Image 1 (spheres, rainbow, N blue to C red):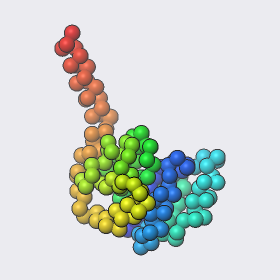
Image 2: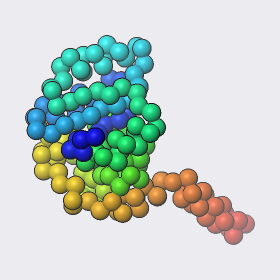
Image 3: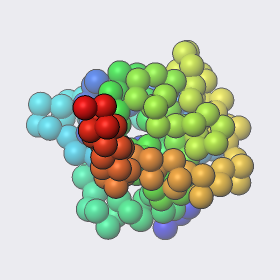
Length: 175
């Protein structure tokens, strides 16, 4: 599998604003973007429009198995996310668990999960131009996989359980 690509995974729907990614990659034709994710029947026209207008350096893989997803995360340079109203978004955390950084819009839940310059790049508006600049200047060697994995662990079930237990213990001592 070619390892010189960026990877985008999410449910394929207009609210995810995948066209932002596609237009950014139009500005950096030397870079490759692989998009994967399921699409609802009602959103198939959106997918067809995206793929009809996508430049040759953007490909759509469809719904992938867990094994294929792990393989794509393992070999990507970085993950791309562009939905400005994403409440949390598990994709950056999954990428970081794989030791990979995330390039995302500086909005929504991405501001909670991505540490600027350490586990990825958060881009400000105008998103298309600034995402293209981030892709163009991206160097995966500047990101330590252990930093990414450490950040991902903060969002693990174990970490969540530990925090809840600490809160509960604090409530017990106040009684």
